[in-house]
Image 1: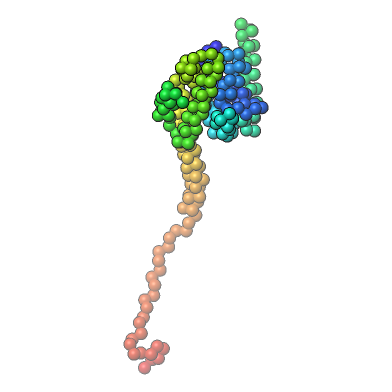
Image 2 (image 1 turned 90 degrees about the vertical axis):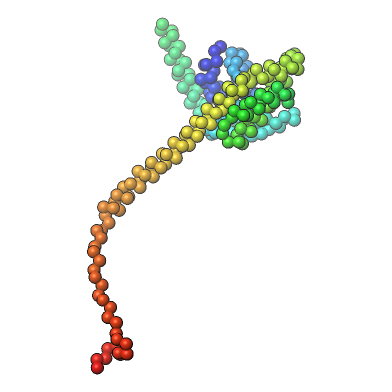
Length: 106
Length: 131
């Protein structure tokens, strides 16, 4: 799949990947890749600036965590982030339904 | 950390803008990601050298990572400057009516009345006694 659609909705995908479970950046990318059936193949390094931005906006919080001798920054949704996720999800569903309706009418 | 990974991280680090603390955290996270990606590639059956290279390819070009980071830094700086300008404008808008009211409501300055000249008693003369 082209990268552009992923890039345009990166924030939504990252928020969705953190719904219900805190994860570090690598696990976030793993989740997105697995859930999309490997269709979202994107430079993984660019996920971290997006995670920092979402945290600066108050949608995520993070902390260092150590497991198996490895130190990783773990992210989780804030209440504001959960609200933003639901709003963006609704927006996306409305948008995709509208596009589908137009395509079916062609 | 391999020299290939260290070189990649150095190029990213040299291209980043913004607060030092955030940059250091980003680089630490990228280093951890490289370790995890290389370990996964190794577990998938790649030779160690190939696994390291594959991990780097997964993270992408240093310029792409730095560009994504710097775009956010620049956007935050612009937003902060706009907030300062907005506060300054707001203070100006709020202060202007007060300044105008003070100017129009203040009484006009009256010319000073001449003060009566002080009369100094002569030396030796007792005050209040006429000889």
